[in-house]
Length: 541
Image (tube, rainbow, N blue to C red; front, side, top):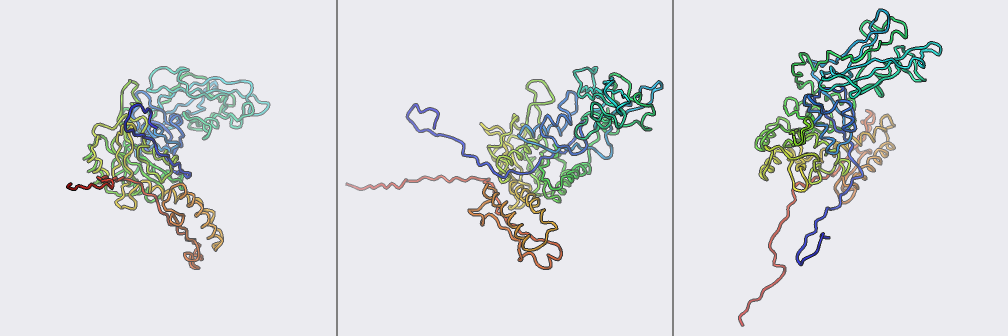
């Protein structure tokens, strides 16, 4: 009902239509490949922005701008859940982790423990460690031989200025020993085993025996001697830095980083390259995505492009693929690197868009195009000035398969396009291609039981039953079109497509046909004058 009916007249009541929530959310995971000052060099799963900061650091003062940080930050702002993060390096000039070597407590001290940053880069020069005495009564390597323990306190000073203090302690490792089989209060406390543990270990440092091997000093004097504020040194972003700028990753470096996803062969991904728009980098990654089959690329646009320039850029791309979509223009957000109130920064849209992909998957399913008034990008102030578009600009960009980001009164900045870079009508839409990826990945997982089973009609019926049940549920949730299940899909796995010849080759052939949902990209309303069935008789009297 209208809010208030106070005066005679005609009232219009506006309300939202019911939203259908799919019972089959997508299974894709976002992946971000980009440069960052610090962080692991292996694929790392993060479940929140806080979790990401724990591994890769946050927006620290005086730190270089990180495309990876900006993309992941905007991803979680847009409602993204977990993501795989790959920090890219360059093979021609690998970064180096800062380190220091601690001496033992012997009368003539020997090297006993090497402390290195957990991951490489010049950032690691800002790590300091204290060594203090631990509990000297309860630890033992055997029940009868006392073993002194020691503590390591880790400080991190962003920007490398100031003096280490309790305010910048990031980790403390207590009551450790340099004896491999030692324990403290029933728990193993060998220093390398505690700090280097891949699950419960440090995110800041790694320990190792010094060059030349372990100290020859007998326990407990082989423990490092107490010392305060030892700074790690030698951290480099690459050869010649600092003060030189970190080396620029090459196309092969991105291909190497992308290949790390082979650790998750059956997992579908939505991949963003964190602001990279160079076709010599993006093109090979597109080829790798096509070969893999279950990866969809969210591509960023160049900065400060006018709509005409963006249209030209898109039409000149050498690759036309259903495995990727590009979004324009760049977006304006509050600058996370600048604490001054009102400061803004223009960033690529890929992080926000990837977050909306995952959010739409969870709330509506992959059959719903990640576009429309429901895709308001939270935290976005607007689009960059050069990206303001007229209706004509939007039409031209849409025909060039560029998905526009526009400001809509009452909704903010929304995604207003759902096209892939494919030149073909059947693979034009993001939701159609991602539905195929989803169905393929699910059906692969559901039919792995069939490998090495007897290849006969019993197996064929089992496969048909499993896939038909899955597709029926997907159709009922709105993922497939058709008035009935028979119109929505079919599964054929029987004697018609499995012959004696294929059986002897160990092959089971399964044919699946699906009627996918296409988004309503254009809503056409025809309005004309109508006399309402009235007739008018004019006569002379």
